[in-house]
Length: 339
Ligand code: ADE
Ligand code: ZN
Image 1 (cartoon, rainbow, N blue to C red):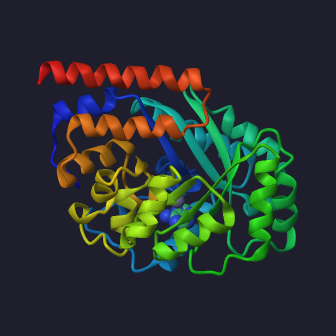
Image 2 (image 1 turned 135 degrees about the horizontal axis):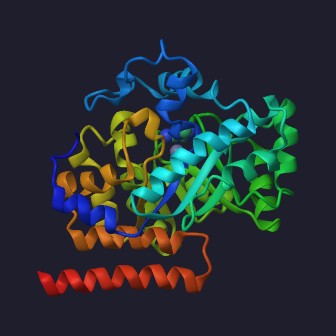
């Protein structure tokens, strides 16, 4: 328990209409599915669920990613099975809108096509939950069979967008700029991880070169007043994952209380909160809201504002966004009356 138990707050958080816009499907792999596959290996809960667990570095995290999860996603049916549980859990926590990504190059090892896999993920969405599916690629993926997939995916109607993820310190190769521009021209939404392990200057580089309006993490932007001013000026949303940042020992996050989301929020930056890779951090979306309240002093009305940022950033028609935002505004007004 990273935050103390508070039943009344928990009920409030669950009832809050929410979004999850930074969720890696492989990193959310349900433990029960791994246990079914290999009950001996997965007899005990993984050590990284302990509150005091910290990854040594991103490399260790990636190695565990390969060991635990990559092995599970061997068919469209497996993506469907995992997505059914993952998206069901999102809905059960009051989530109304989810953006989930999968690692695109992994599809090179599957019998099924990319569109078949995406349809399998989409078909797992419970009623009432809007789901958008993103293809994740790493900085150095544009080679071999993955290169073909990366070029092809922009023509898949099932795909909503692309995301740059993986080790952040690898060079951003020249194909990336062209691909991100081509993706937008093809009607896909584009986002990118930055400012998790690399400094604010890398957030600037990604904004300059990839022209995205959504940054995954972006928390190290706080190290530069100019970068924060740019986020504000250009209305860039940061999809922040506080518990992930804590467990991955991101610079500036020795504790949840030190997390820069408080300062970014107070500066007026549009921040959302998300669980990133719940299998690897042992977290839920509700835990992220609890953490903001207990460790960073976010009031209930501030939690409502964070939730609203998610709907503003969502790939939803304006009239649908307005409905969700009106629900949140009503909750906020009720709070003001009660308080
Ligand atoms: N892929 C899965 N989780 C990630 C993270 N936290 N940063 C970059 N790439 C990732
Ligand atoms: Zn991520």
